[in-house]
Length: 305
Image 1 (cartoon, rainbow, N blue to C red):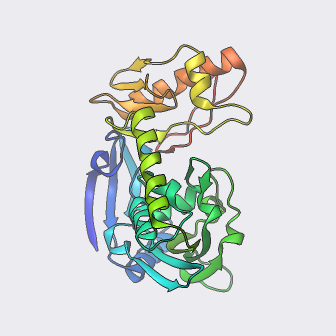
Image 2 (tube, helix red, strand yellow; image 1 turned 30 degrees about the horizontal axis):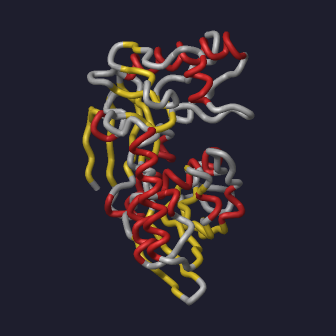
Image 3 (tube, helix red, strand yellow; image 1 turned 90 degrees about the vertical axis):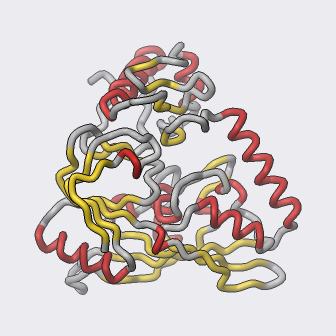
């Protein structure tokens, strides 16, 4: 297992901003991960799991705990079953969602096209029930292999395979956010499709992303969750906040739902900009924007604070 101390999180998160982790560990396999978690749990030390870092912001300063990255060694992607009607795709938690979507397309399996442009890992995508363009993980996920925390029957971290139905998948939510269980593998059940149509749909969505999203700048994708009955980006645009800047952080003028790092943004810049946006939208429309991005190190401020 690779271990470092005082590790900057800038290169491990897509925002390219934020502070440090007191300890940073990259386990090689599930056994190493379980043993590390057993040690941390027994010692009562704080920790958090990090995948590809595309939906996470570390605040400035030091996270006084252990950041555990589920990385490339958990990146397996393979077809476990193929029939005329469909197939099953098994993906490790560290595999990139975009790679999984491309493998599905190569195998003539449809349903995963929406995920081709999402930059996160499989584990993070299940944890957040990631989605785009009308598709979500809950639409295609069949079962997951989890690393479960200790309980009354098992005093140590242990593996368990569960159906997707027990994960309570909903908009940007899964039961994993409360239970603390960790995704090791996810298995998707996908119907057969026409390869040309699948690739054409993926190309169409890639073109839409390129035209409408500020992909040329570091960001965490859509910064805010969609409020019921509204679109966050439209509220922000209607509030006159396009291009609003704090330090190196900016509300993208190309897509107001994105907060981007224009260069040299700090975690503090991003948090201050977030709060300005929240307060302005709340004052104008009475709608509270909740961050979709995981903020590590500081509680996300409420509108009006």
